[in-house]
Image (cartoon, rainbow over all chains, first blue to last red):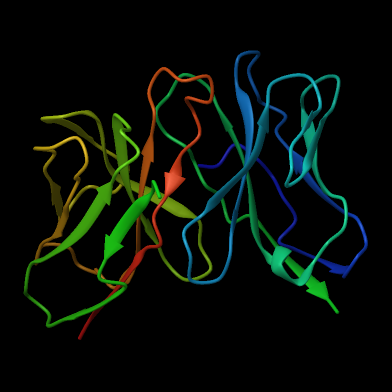
Amino acid sequence: DAKTTQPNSMESNEEEPVHLPCNHSTISGTDYIHWYRQLPSQGPEYVIHGLTSNVNNRMASLAIAEDRKSSTLILHRATLRDAAVYYCITQGGSEKLVFGKGTKLTVNP
Amino acid sequence: DGGITQSPKYLFRKEGQNVTLSCEQNLNHDAMYWYRQDPGQGLRLIYYSQIVNDFQKGDIAEGYSVSREKKESFPLTVTSAQKNPTAFYLCASREAGAMDADTQYFGPGTRLTVL
């Protein structure tokens, strides 16, 4: 079973920031937090990952709570191409990434 | 360009036939994975391989078989024993030992429909 909890769906307007929340209250101290996204009829795409500190890359930012029990993926300016299902995954030494149902993000023009 | 290719994109088969899905990567990654995705659901792990000539069952291996004779190839056979094979199949790979070792790179998927 997935070890994270995400809202089933969220909506945003184009050009506005989007904050996608994820709860992972049972995360262990060595587990990384990964975010992937999946556009319709495509394979998932890596977005960002982090351990303790906030992370930024060209796609998004990842804000990790101090107690690491939750995190937020931030898309600074949503575009129509950001409409996808976003998966939040925690992973330790195991080979497996456990994908839940994710959050379906709708971006309105 | 480096990446993962899966072919074909769409595949139709009659019930009772075995079918093999192709997955090739030129990323020089050691580990490869097969996932299944049903409509509105997350991904479920079928098989994975960390090295050539070795592979392990995932969470839903029954009715599937794999081989890993070459580093770049990890074909999946959906056998007639798989009771509900219609699904979207995704292949992924990962570079073992890199700083981003846990990052998996996915192919475009094969949508299998059994008639």
